[in-house]
Length: 378
Figure 1 (cartoon, rainbow, N blue to C red):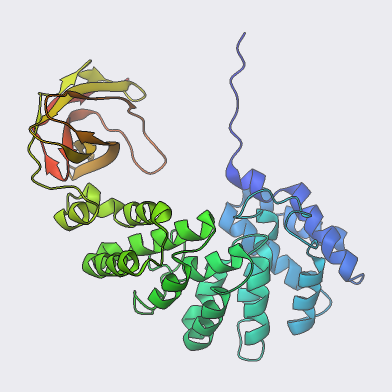
Figure 2: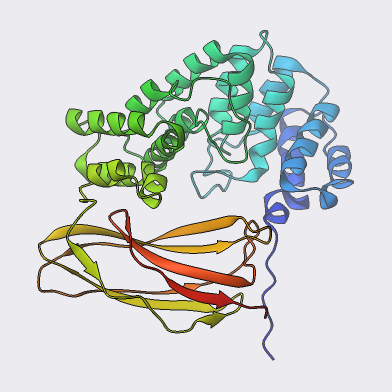
């Protein structure tokens, strides 16, 4: 008999009884007056029913309730409770462990005042090495924008790549799962200029994602910024292509000629496609949509190919999902096969509704004729 693996929810891995106990033990080690057992009992009385964000808040509030000290003294206890390095704490990735997410929340919740401002911002630069602190920094950007931007600028020059990445990530205009900041979208461009050629992939990826956020409302500014970096040599060639593609990825999906031209793809390239062939035209949620076509060209040109699946929601609203297929060079006299097995599956945010669908290929931003299929109830 085959036993199906049960997926453990992220919230259960992120903050659970073991990690809450670890926090209590580490804090007690630096502050004997902190009742670790009472802290754990308090948190665990609520934790099982809470989602991840609320688990972080609950743990932070319990730290505040059980610590016998407040303000700078409490912050000092939390800082000293950290293991000497993230590696010593068992952190195996750049983003960090949720074990330390309540620490940054504590700073934003209880030390976001003028009295503790400098100490709080310095602490977040430390905490982010154990768990990324960008959401907490955004609270400070809202209340103390000028002072926090000075700290952000300093963080961009920090020796630790995780603190440097915080400078870019915390100021992203559209940071996922975070409140918006009431600052100009381009406020952090000088910071990005400092970080775009960083030696860390973790940092460069954040820079690219930051520019991608900007591209939603200011695509021309993003192109101008990328052009300036390219000409100045701020970003080594081996990293520039990645940053540019990531920054312009949504504009590429939308077929924006400026993005394609900047990346070296001729929007009206002399290419032809054979009609799309679908292996099956009746599918259900979880099935694989297999398609193929052939690309030909009359001269050698770089090609950037995507496929677009169109449908309607249950309310009748049009919906498009655009996916990357390949980058290559079309050569005269050669046939470039385009094929993909794409699994059609509902996700936590997008439901695969029964009805009529279509798929089309997009080459260098140009949409080619579609093929249709249906999704029916299982």
